[in-house]
Length: 226
Image 1 (cartoon, rainbow, N blue to C red):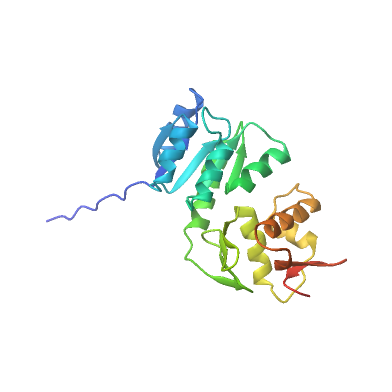
Image 2: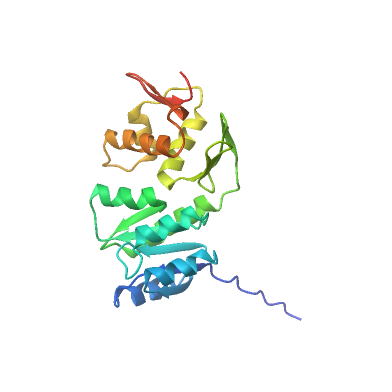
């Protein structure tokens, strides 16, 4: 008797996009690799995402009801760690920072290439799927795979993907002072300025405590006290 193999079910993907032309087109393209659920309203998308039934979420920024930034901020505040790729027609640095700071893992500016969209999705799913590792920084418990950092005194904080990668780099070189240029090269995208490093250091300190990352004048940043 010949044994037939059962095909593996495609990973479930939530797409929250209200554009009547782009939404169905994305379903058609992404449907080659994912089981796509299309929702056109921010409030309905938030309700679906809260159930945690999806491997990833593609989320438009401008939506009827709750906008994309509000959706992802609410998800992170309630502990939902499903990776989110945010789509936006707003291409300024401030707009991108808003989405990432709210808890999105990555962003893509419209119009975009579908090959890049697919690659970005694979990337955030790969990072999220890594085995859970716990890193202890003083009284803080840092879980990079879940983008969580927790203190018995300050409670749990949810980091953005960029904040996570920044803190992870510093923990991997805990006995070193890393220059802003090196951090820029290893964490951020080509074209970002050195000032972006300072901005994200501020973001991490704001979510934790100022002394978690030390400024070494004229040299860069390191964990704890120099």
